[in-house]
Structures are given as structure tokens and as C-alpha cells.
Length: 236
Image (cartoon, rainbow, N blue to C red):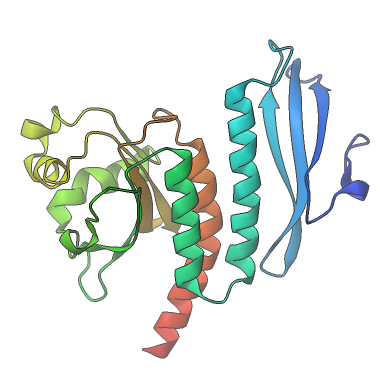
């Protein structure tokens, strides 16, 4: 049964319902943003909650996150309805790169028939940034070993400074340094407890310690990613 205060009866697919509520359980005041969206053949309620307990107005940071949430809702709808996978990924990566004010945003997938090897299959670049996709094909397991472990145990990669990797992980350092990368945020696309792919941004200039937004996008992309992988396997 829904909560008594749930606005489910007035929610729509095409617009957000914005409201405020005090959560008695955690004793916090939240700004809430709800709408309906379709995931596959199900209609679900999508909500973004921002803690504004100590604020008398919505800060710029909150507005930007709400704007991103609005984009995410659009991407989720696109991921569910758009038949062309390439268009889905390109739009999603562009939104992710723009939000983080990054140089690049990308999707890596495992190379078919070469377990542990990864290739950059989709890439978005900011204006004036040199594409790196062609240089990141069949990346060997030893170059991403630390990333795979972090994906499985921590859930993401948050890299703020390249220099510590020079001795600890020289091949990883060499690959990143050759692309003028100093900061990275990356999260996996998980399937049955395994890393099926990963998305990330290079040199983010905004929210550099916050992987929340990219995690949300990854969770929506994984639904469509599984469908694309299943279709590919059936054709083999």
C-alpha cells in the first residue's frame, strides 16, 4: 500500500511533480521531484530527493542536480523506447559529459572472444578535445586490473591525481597519461555480479567527488545493455 502522502494519483509521464515533505523517521526536510516512467513493460515512479533541512532556498547545486535528474528521466525513457542502441548511448554520454563538464565520456565493452580485454565502443568529446576511441581498443587485462577490482568491491573508480599510479600501476598510468587524463570517474554495468561494461568521464570539472549522477545513468543503461547483449548472442 502506498503511503498516505504519496502523490501517485497526480503523477504524469511528461512532467515532474515538485513538492516538499518532512521525513519524521530521519527528521529531515526534503525537496522531492516525482514523475512516472516506463522501464521495459512496467510503469514505475521515479523520485529525486534533495535534503534542504539547512537551506531556506534551493541552492545552485541543487538546481543543477534537479536538472540532471530531469535529463536522466528523459534518458531512461529513451533507453526503453528507442530501437537504435547507438543513438541511445550517444545521447546519454553527451548528457553525462556535459553535466560533469568533462573532456570525454565513454562506454567500454569486453572484446568478444577475448576475456579480460576491453574496447572503447562509444565516445563523446567536448569541443576542441581530441578523440581517443581508436587508441583504446583491446586494452589488456593488466591495464584495467585495478579498475575491475574497484568495480567489484567499491562500485566505482574515483581518480583525482594520476601521479600515485606511476609506480603502483605503470601500464594504467602510461595509458591515462598519454591521453592527458588527470581525473576520472567511472562506474560498471553489472550483470549477474560480473562487470559487463563500464561508463566513465575524463577530467571532470564539476562534481569531481560525486559519482551519484553517473551511477543513476548506469543503472538505467544496464537494462538496455542486457537486451542488446542478448540480441547479439542470439544472432551468433
